[in-house]
Length: 102
Image (cartoon, rainbow, N blue to C red):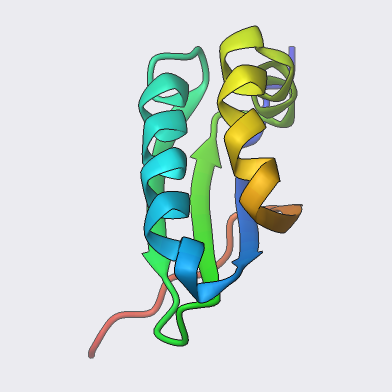
């Protein structure tokens, strides 16, 4: 049996600067839900310095775990208020190479 490979989600949310704080709060609430789901590895939210974006960098144990999360009723409910203040573009990636100082 082949072991499932981890996947990286990079999702950029775009919003009006007046909504960035609320977007961060909603995304943080959703991350707390996601962190309890099977296959969750890690998640980091990044606030854009321009006030117009928030980036979500998440790692899931497999594409199947990510798909199950996306269908979870609690996650769908948490997305409701996010969709009223932001647009977003999620993409899944295979893990890449990390570089650190020599």
